[in-house]
Length: 72
Image (cartoon, rainbow, N blue to C red; front, top):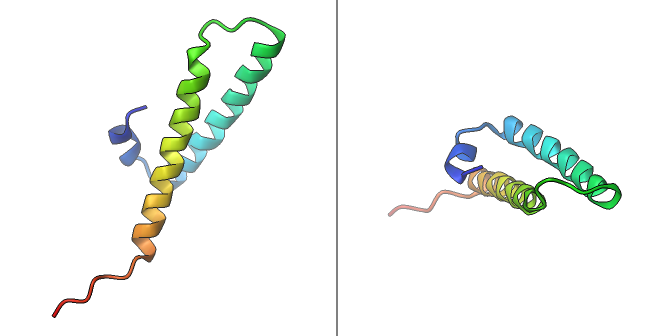
């Protein structure tokens, strides 16, 4: 997924998507061990998507707790 698409999602939607992607990643890893998967590049793509979403959540959390700069 593109970062622009992810930025449109709410925090709750991002958390749900992370959980879904982690389940899918687990299933793909399991299938890779027991069987041949059609698209092995999908493992890497899902890992990167999870990282993007977690980074976006961290950015939002930092922005919410950041102190506004003092203006003089």
